[in-house]
Length: 107
View (cartoon, rainbow, N blue to C red):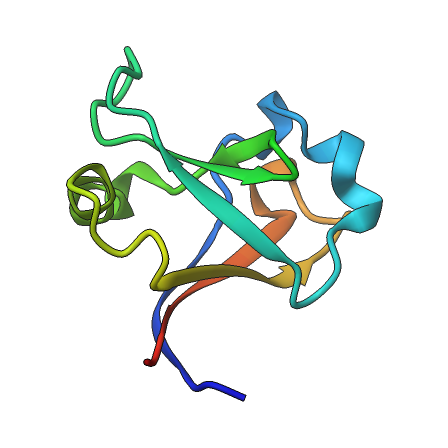
């Protein structure tokens, strides 16, 4: 098994506004999610969407997305990064229901 280097962990922003509820049952601890830069996002030029099976479930929080968006938009890191579900709790406020970890995969 390859090692991973932890970069960051955070709650998925905007979870209640997207398709998180429709895939909630499938999101288990360790589930891998995808990062999709959205440079044309009218609210945030550094927006990075979080998707699962092509369903948008939210975003990387804006306080943490600038460097990540720049690297992804430039074509760096897309295959080197893993975003993994670390915690899910339906009893929390919707903005805090899904907690994820961002890792770099070692070569």
